[in-house]
Structures are given as C-alpha cells and as structure tokens.
Length: 97
Image (cartoon, rainbow, N blue to C red; front, side, top):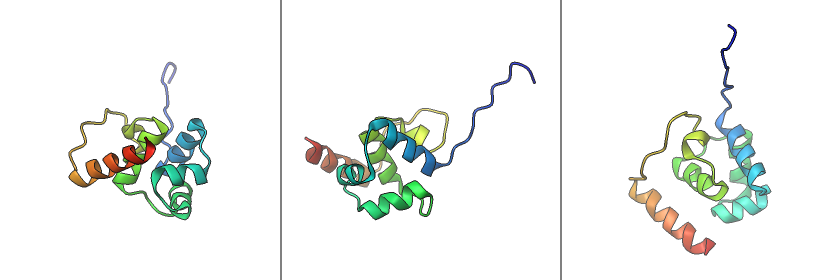
C-alpha cells in the first residue's frame, strides 16, 4: 500500500549487538562494564540464550539506548520497580564511577 511504512522487527540479540556497536564497545569491553563473563555476552548477542531483564537494563544503561527498544517494544520504559534490579544498577554505577 503506498505511503505505508514497514518497521522491521529485529530480535533482541540483534538489538544488543547493534547497541554495543553504536556505543563503540567490543564484547570484552562491554562484558567488563556489565559485570558479565564474555561468554555470557556472546550467548546473548548470538541468540543462544535470552538475556535476563537485569542484564537488558544494564545493557541499556551502558549503551544509552532505551530499554523498550532492546526488548523489542515500541513504547516507553517505565520506572524500575524491581528491588534486585535497582540494587544491581547501584552497584554498576559505583563500579563505573
């Protein structure tokens, strides 16, 4: 149909790879910043293993892309309410400082 825009639906592992590329991080650098083993990050970026929510949140923060985009959604991401996730992000910010 003329005038219709099709937005491709990229899988999460592709979005993670693209976010890391745009942020200029190689897998080793990214894994260190995220506090992950590099093999875990490779599993996420290859699609062999889906990332946990807390890992997606950390990737979004490190790469500065919206969480909703990493998750494959099209809406905004609301406040973080999970206590475990908030604790992880506090620790990550201390390490990054």
